[in-house]
Image 1: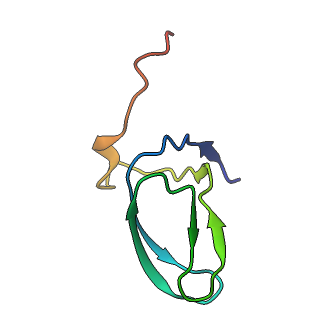
Image 2 (image 1 turned 90 degrees about the horizontal axis):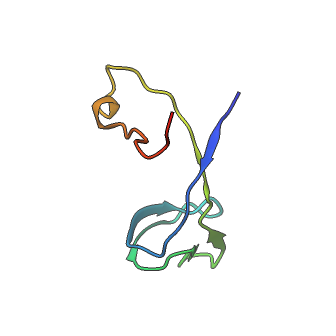
Image 3 (image 1 turned 45 degrees about the vertical axis):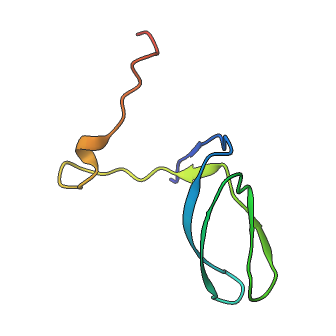
Length: 75
């Protein structure tokens, strides 16, 4: 089973490596308010999705100790 979570784009800075699914062109984007990207090579435009896959990690993963815990929800 695959799980996703939703993120909210707040128009903040984005630094992203981009590999075009259509032509394979590699680009790099740095900027504000990036809700969609356009490939310089083929002109295809892609929306930045709000769904992010959830991938379970274990104690041996380098990000394990950096996990955020929701301390604002009671209970």
